[in-house]
Image (cartoon, rainbow, N blue to C red; front, side, top):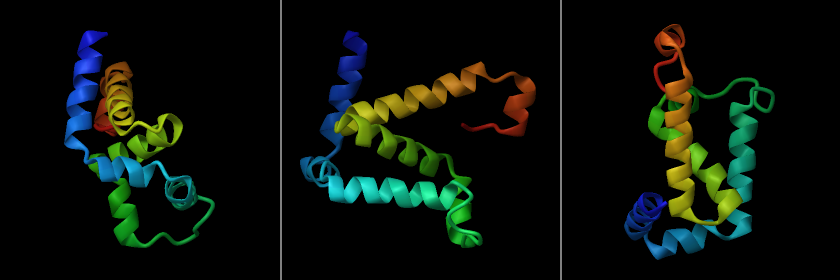
Length: 106
């Protein structure tokens, strides 16, 4: 548990306080999450612009989206980032070789 707290504290030091304050405003984070779900959910937008669909193939974007969902739940950017990385790692470890070949990233 100490390791998790240390990692969380180190990540919290990297994120500026202004980012944490900005994202903790419900009128910013929830509309972003809802719009992203609408775009990537497959039913909200029929023709997704290629720039946005290319973002969906990026592991960095996927990690950012997982972090935003975690932040909406926890209101703690460091905990959300650690949770997103842990979730991606668990998904990677649970896949067999065939699944890793088909989708190498989470």
